[in-house]
Image (cartoon, rainbow, N blue to C red):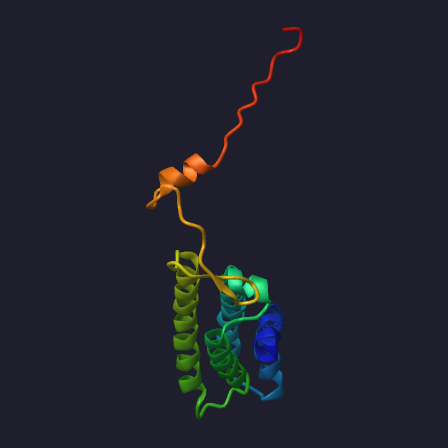
Length: 166
């Protein structure tokens, strides 16, 4: 749980630190002029991509309640962030492979986050879970068997308000 909570706290700062690393890496590792042109596209892409993925993660109820991401999120963000960090070294021997990998993982992360959000948002059957993880069965709906008896068992009191002076 500690690792998942650490990733939860890392998501927003990483949206600014990773593009900064790509920018600083040009000067540290003496990248070519073409790398600077690539950087003009990469920095906004990483910034916006990370913020969109962070918003999709934080839109899930379990993430907000537990303040921790899922294990799928930990795996996906780890791979994507490591590939993005490796791009900042500007090593021509493996830069293209790392770039393609980072783009593929970013697209896969987007769809995975949508899938997790969708899976969590739809009704999940009979058993529901509390914040502590305890499962319970919700009370039957009014349209189920025995609904007439349940409705008859409850007393309804109607209070009508009289206008002043009446």
